[in-house]
Length: 112
Image (cartoon, rainbow, N blue to C red):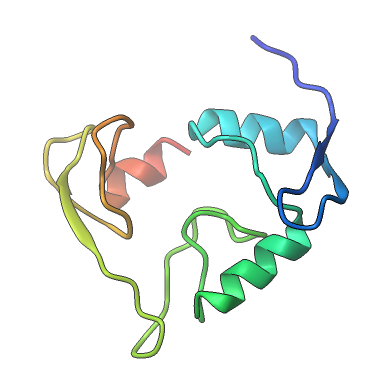
């Protein structure tokens, strides 16, 4: 098992340094996410400028993996894909590229 250690990253927007903790690195690695390029403050600003008004689906500052609860304004377009866990239909808030696995809600919750 790989051991992570806290490290310091530089924000691509404001050039300020921010901490990327060992637990955050483990979380990102488990979900095959790339390292964050922006500090939490710039991520929040970017998220707000996109009109996100509900829960978080990808974790730009908390609520990792919670369901998106937008309605009306700021509602995300959903895409249909085949679940890599059970072969059923998966509805996801991103256009699957085929480079990473996609899971339906049931399979995703069991993989956490």
